[in-house]
Length: 341
Image 1 (cartoon, rainbow, N blue to C red):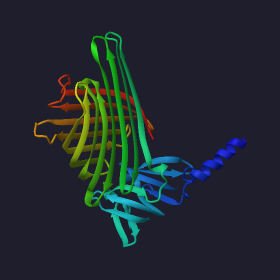
Image 2: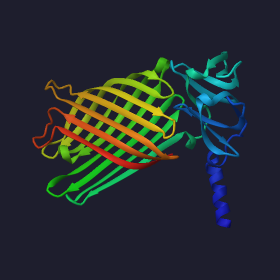
Image 3: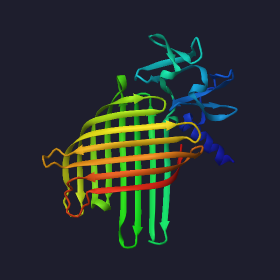
């Protein structure tokens, strides 16, 4: 017991944000006339996440809310990309709120708001992610397949940092093994009018394409063309440099252009469904006409709260690989079960 108390005190001194949270003084008013005293955590994808003493952490559909109010400061982002920072008060009618900023009071329709984030939230409360794993075995061909995916994101009002890892390993009698890993990290800085600046890093290998190692760093800018509570569409452009080695080559260095397309959409009616897709086009700046193309798509179907089933597709294409043994195309699909947090 003494050791346990010492541990609790130590954690409290080192990480006070974990053991304490602000008072449940925010108020959410529903369209049916009910209300709840709580701590407003965030608004994402059409759901307001709150934490109350009686119900714990719950998600409330944004269109079921008449008013919200709080003396604490939040950042609100609209579909247009405009942001407001201030305390929140009920508007003159249902579906409206007022934000008290240093420049004055602004009145905003709920339908225009796509994100609400606390300004002074703790480090750990700004982290979310997911972990999924899949396994398949076929008796007739003795084919065994393992796939693993993990994602970690740290989101603040002005920027977003994320890391994504996926791995696929497959063996089958009479066929080459599939051994593919990819680690991607990104930093996105949110600018005015839905413009963004970004940095990108990637490490990958693929036995199917005789690729032992490829490291890439790049950056540039982009814009979110569409931003609603359910759907986001964005385009990116910039430059990158890569260092790669195939089984029968020395290390090669390339400079490339970078063009990307990002899409995600979300349905929060039960069962919740999330669809994401991204495409990256990388023409090499050496004059030999080489270009690479990467695409990923995922569909997640909620099974229980925070538990999901996932179907994923990936495509990696190189029209002129430097290796004589490398395949131009690497395509596959995986299924897995996962947990989000």
